[in-house]
Image (cartoon, rainbow, N blue to C red; front, top):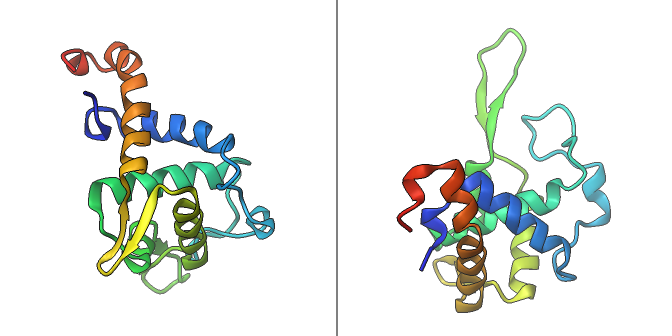
Length: 149
């Protein structure tokens, strides 16, 4: 069966974000329209559906890297902070965004909180693998090396 590892990340994240739009458990909070994704950003995201895309990307990272915590995910979504004439420094991404996404994924039953961090539940693994399996034919046309899966 095709898994998350067999499908390009951009295709999988785009499709999972579309699936999340129909899930009532995963909804952007009221403040998401005004929030930046980190102190290193100057403006909020331009994409209106950025919350679903970030949730899908976080979900994929938990699947691949899990168990993970909030600090590791903040580091993954951080970037360089422009300090003007001074050299740039790395700053972690928004902890509130990651925390709320973790809580929503837990409420949906896709992620469980354990002693080492968040891990994907069997229902979450099944969900992502089914999405990946549905994308198998589309991935084969865009990336011919994936045709054998």
